[in-house]
Image (cartoon, rainbow, N blue to C red):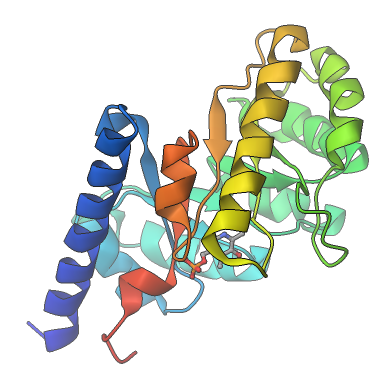
Length: 241
Ligand SMILES: *Cc1c(COP(=O)(O)O)cnc(C)c1O
């Protein structure tokens, strides 16, 4: 067994332990927090090893890279088992058709145009509804994608028409600058926004999931209510690939 696989295993168990501890500190059950391993920094071989280590939910921010890895790992499914892929980056509408059959969740839905296009494509091509999250730009960073927080009530009110999708919650990235205390404010803002719009969300949609927190801030995200954390860098430290 190459040395990097042992390092990957140590990194993964270290992160799982930190997730558990953060959940307990917040008075939450550790099982209420899902880890999505973000594989954008590594090749398919490393991604496959993560799956073998029991990490079944993987994330990619670029659709083409998700296609490549999802196909590579699907061809090894007999050996490593199946993977639930999350798209966590911007999706252009011309990439919807190729992406839909490969993903279990699209976390980065950032416009009503994309919501409508996804719904139409899913109605035509999928048997199971596609799970999605609405990305919200809580920090107001001009370089970030996502709905403006003020726009969200109107977006949520109109979800009822989208029958081929299941909106499951909200996703955000904290401001790049300002460290963990600013990140905490951003995460709290997302949770409070979710609490405000939850009562107007038409079933079968529901805003149960909060996807927030990455390597530098996942512990405060869990303390603020994250149900999904998306972690990349910390998983691959010291594996030299
Ligand atoms: C890359 C990425 C992550 C993971 O970031 P790390 O800091 O490497 O853990 C999480 N979310 C999104 C949207 C990303 O693009």
